[in-house]
Length: 415
Image 1 (spheres, rainbow, N blue to C red):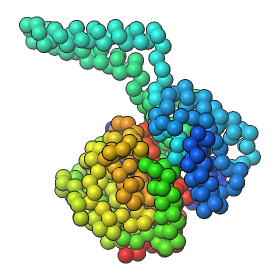
Image 2 (spheres, helix red, strand yellow):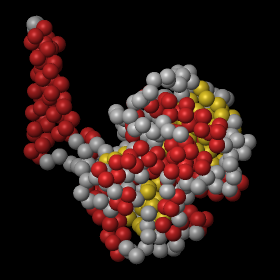
Image 3 (cartoon, rainbow, N blue to C red):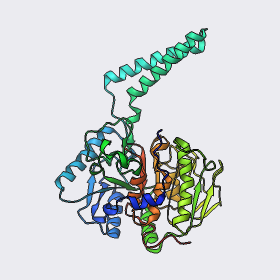
Image 4 (cartoon, rainbow, N blue to C red):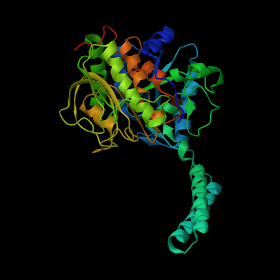
């Protein structure tokens, strides 16, 4: 992973980013599944609370499962949405808000029969080599050659399977205005502040990107609570404490990449929170995570790494915002018994969280120092804070929460 070189002075980030694109209620399109009654009910509830224009509601006819095929995504969501936006090109829509009932994940394109045959041939060839490695006496040179061949075959198998072309529906639909990008892996997000000096070189431009957020969760009751808590915290201020769970002490070296960069970013987020808010800040820089009872009155949280195993350390405040950096934390919002962090955090009381539907690699996550700096600034909405701090689109990340939510709008955070 290349360093984004975004460990910058926070004042540059807050002052240096254009305030002119502030998201408005009239710029949000509510997207619902007509086959799920609760989807429309929740959208109408949100529309009334946020005073979204009545016409800004778009219904699609899709599966109510969390997964959909690429064909269904294209024919039942992408195509109708493009047609709707073309018909209403006089209406300024800048944000899509997906509601309970809209699928969470879109699969890679289906393989052709010829590709399936090629795939089976490659898998058979690799199994033969693996058998030889396990059962035949080979010289070191022969073993090295077969190891190399096995790895080459695995690469061909992965490429043919197109496993890197699946994505979160949310991240994919953010590019609804662009019909010519590659599905393989990701596309650079032009709103990400780390790419601001690369605008002329980016394949995707800002006017081709829709902000996307999702009001979803384990039940309609949870979604309604998210809406209510966000409005309450916006009116009364998000009060409580901030918890940041790094794994190591702040590194001395510069030009950080990968895990080191993100761990350092958690440290920096804690420092910035202390500097620009009055929230008490707790920073853990040990490999162990916060445990039960450690995080009372939690208003903000960022930490890692407990893969698919939520640790109930938190007493969440109404309107709390936080996310956990791990690879599977939004693989489901509905599956009974699942302990992935997004689902469990929503069940336990957060109003907004972020997570991946599949392996995003660490650079797929928003940079903690950026996300929380923008959120704490009070000017930027949740959706803007997310898109300014997230490097990639057409990838695996999902933003859960009210896109207009500004927990620190009226005043700096209070204790």
